[in-house]
Image (cartoon, rainbow, N blue to C red; front, side, top):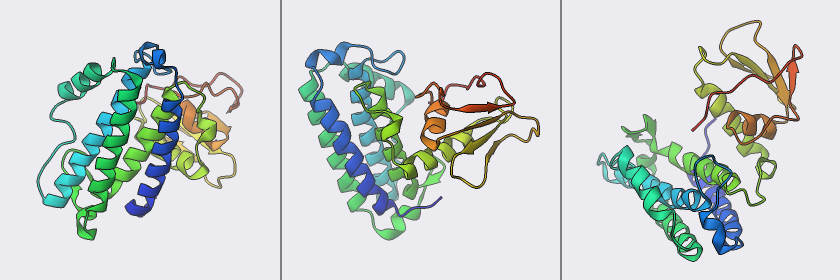
Length: 234
């Protein structure tokens, strides 16, 4: 599925504003409390959202200038940046996310048309994939705040694209499934096992389940049985 990256930037803008409204409404003490993402506090999630925007700004800057600029200098720097910022006051976290988003939006606006087609060595994809990646991060981690925003709030288009991406990213040796999202003509096949269980349900619920953001309570399994155990995503 290909979408104009500048069109997706409009979705990124709206998604970021939704997340910021949620963050602004949090109790300041929530920053140090566990988020819905195992092992991270709410402060970890908020800081990651900001640093991720900066990482994608780096990738777009590299595409525009022709330099090989990675998102993060190293995996260790990524982890350290999240840990260092997680305990900051809520107000500082909110300002950080907004400022980081504005830098990312400015970097996208500065991209000439040809720069979007440039391949990024660190991702193996073109720069045109970056706005989608940012939208995915904002929407999924908004859910991780555990503050009332859920996969039920995802748009149909976002949920379907996320589902297709996640389903295509699993190792067929680890997971063999047939996914049947309601209202979609063609099933999504994970692996080539003709006897693989068929899991059906709303697109949002399937996407939430595969990403570990939903328990799959409203999904069906055929033949009857328990939902398969899903490897951890991201």
